[in-house]
Structure formats: structure tokens, C-alpha cells
Image 1 (cartoon, rainbow, N blue to C red):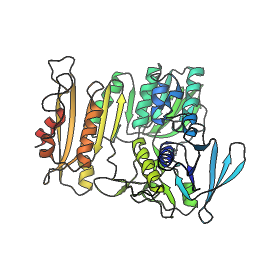
Image 2: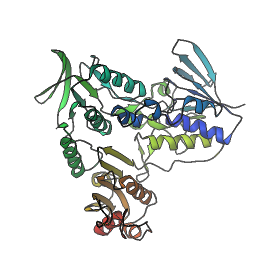
Image 3: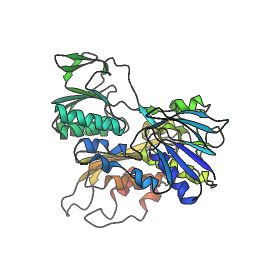
Length: 446
């Protein structure tokens, strides 16, 4: 019987395990997870903390029972401490200190990412939190319930920081967001970042950009956050959300090569430099669909695809990952911001001579109320007219995510602006127009 060992119980690990079990009923599959929350949606953490999801257990894509019912062995609260690539063995240590040696024929590394801990003194003080895993979420939720803080400082103006700002505002907390860059949400163009800033300020958030947090100290029962240049804020609690880096220490110690941002280097089959060892998800590189270069873009959607491909290849298939576009959506109160592909600056850096057009229009026929204004930024190559990127912002009622997905499909398949204009998209007055807003944006670009 073949033995598959998977290190990591999140998206890539469980996806790989399930795919192996679908294709091969006889292989032994063991998942080693360093926590007790296998296959939980960490993307849903802000919505639980904000009260939109009532029970954290509902964040589970599958329960532990669902996974074991598929014939997959789960070793929870167990850390893989060593990989012996020559003997094909993994040393796993339980929370109680019990050591187990697992033999494998194929090994999957899905150790995920870890929160960046910036060079800020005082991050170990009570009341300072990082947000990455369900344990972090439950600890913070307990603090909020027991202390009912009136104010919070969030360090970091990216996806997690902004979603957590909404969550805390929903719980009645006064929120200040400090971002080192000169604007928040740098994954979209400045024009959209400014709209997001205004929306958050309308909801009561204070947005501070261009400031580098240096220290956190305790002062008169509160936390004092000092940033340069010349900023001092006091709050009851501090949340640090400045991004994540791949968790690759175990892999590197085993001789597995790393690449971009120290993520595990893999080929399109998700194979590492050591035969029989695969890697995927937030600990591994991805191929960019447009540039064909390795990138590090940590997304749950990518991790699920990596896992499926790994599972298929373990079972003898020849599946390849065709690349990421960094397609993302974020909901902030009643507004959705979405992006895919390359923006102007990214396209130029990749060697394209690109142009971006900005269009504002209605999401559907305005006579069917309520209708919503949406903005679309479409980027395409000037010479070939190949679509390279798209950004959309608008109401949560305006099918923003559906439309960014259409754009992603077009980019993935190297569709040009004229071809996109003639795509057969659906229409009914409550939902769209005879020319979908995306096609209007393409026409405006042309």
C-alpha cells in the first residue's frame, strides 16, 4: 500500500488528500496538522469577529469528521519537526510530546504562511494581537468579549487590516488604521484606494498613511503606538496585519529549494527539487499566467487548485498549474473592490506597452431601481489589444465578483478587447444591460 503524508491541514493539504482518495481508494493518506482546526476558512475570520458569522465552527469547509469519513487519517495538534528525504520519513510530535515516525512514498508540504512580525518593539505586550489562524481569532474574540475595548489601532492597510477595521467598527470599537505606504490597499490603483479610504472614513475609521510604527508601550492602562514621523496614538488594543511570508523552515532544512520571497520552488506539476515531494498553497511559488514567471501570491483559491493538481499527479496523472492572475475581491461594508491580472505599472514592468481606461457606468438598466454606479479600470496592450488586467469597484448588489471573474476568464484565455466586446454575455434589465458594463469598458478602451 502506498503511503502519502501531507504536512498541513489547510486548503492545499485537504484538497490534495481528497483528490487522492477520489482517484485511489487503497492509498493510505495521513494529514499532519499543527492545530485542531483542519480545513477552516481563515478568510472568514473577519466576518466571524464582526458578527456576520455567528459561530466560528461555521468557518469549517469540512469538519474533522467529514475528512476522516473519507478514509483520511488526521493527526491534529501535531507538528512535523523533521523530514528525512533519504529514508523517506517524517518525524511528527504531538502537543503532548509524543513522537511518531511516519514513512511515506510521496510527501506533500502545505505548511502555509506565517504573519510578518515587523521590527516594532512591544508586540509581545498584552492587548497586541496578530491575525492569521483560528487560534488567533478565538483569542482575540475572547479578549473583545471580556474587555469590550473602546478603541483599537490596526497596523497595516491591506486586505486583512481593512476587513478587520470593518469587523471592529461593527462591534462598536473606534478604529485607527496606520499604513506605512502612502495609501491603503495597494493591490489596486490609487484611484480606487482613495475611494476605499473615503468609504472607511464615512463609517468612522481614521486612516493614516505614510507612517512607520516604531514601538508599542503601556501607558496609563492603554497601549501607546508611536510611529514616524511624529505620530502617537493611544488605544485599548492593537492588531498587527502587515502581511504574511511563506512558512518554509522545515522544507529548507530538508534541502528543498526556495525561490521568490523564500517560497518553495516548484514546477508546473507542483513538484519540488526532490523527487516524490510536492508543495503548494501559501508556502509555495506560483506561476503567473501572463508573465510566465514565478510569483508569490497567497490566495485560498490558488491553494485549492495546487492541492487538486498535487493529488492527481500523486495518482499518476500529468496535471499542470496554468498560472495565477491574483484575482481577488474584498467586501468592505456595502462596497466590493475586485482586481485581476496586471495594472498599468505591473504591465509596464512585464514589458507590455499598456494603456488603462477608467469608466463609470450603471450596473444594470437604470429604470429598474435600485441601480448602482460601478467603476471599471481595464488594462490592455496597445499593440495586440490583449486584455491584461481589470479592477472594479461598486456596490455589493452590483455583481462585482461575477464581473471580475469574467475578466479573469478573458485574461486567462488571452482574449483581445475586440473579441471581448463580442462575447455572448447574459442580459436581463434587473442585472445588466444589452452591453454588459465590462463590454462598455472594453468599448471605451477601444
